[in-house]
Image (cartoon, rainbow, N blue to C red; front, side, top):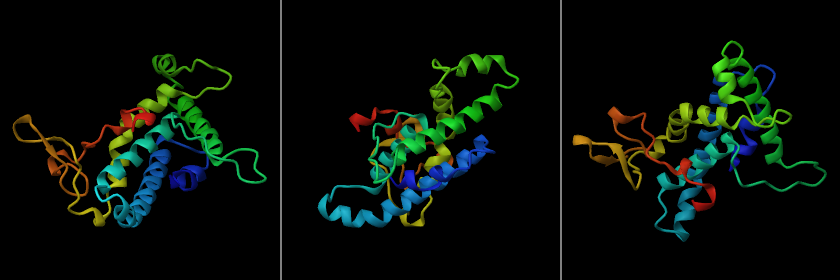
Length: 196
């Protein structure tokens, strides 16, 4: 994923809000989609059954894993580096979610209990990260699929709410129809990474 090299890696943690994080994650998703869309034709020559919407869905799931602190890929250290880019990203996200935690729990004891981390010395705020992802995943999907180059591309599963409550396929730009534009047509982000 180019995500590690783009906006999330560059976030300034001094003055973060949940909205700053959303903008940066969406921009990273958009850059990721651009590179995947650009390189997909070359990939299709080797794997002709590859669909761009499925490729984007897998990348979307990886972004979700990174945000939630579940990514299995740990990265490699470059020469003269003490830590991998992945470790730097993890540190940055911990700092960001610590600030979000402090902000949302300032006056709310119930949220403080809900998001309290098991490890007070090195908190990861996994529950807060999970809730943040759930609340913002549709915006990340929109950012990932906003390219006009996706026009006419459909997702392989019927997961959109269709007529008479039967599911329909995401038929344009890997998205559900206008009525269901907020529905993300994939659940790959809830499938463990090693099973995708």
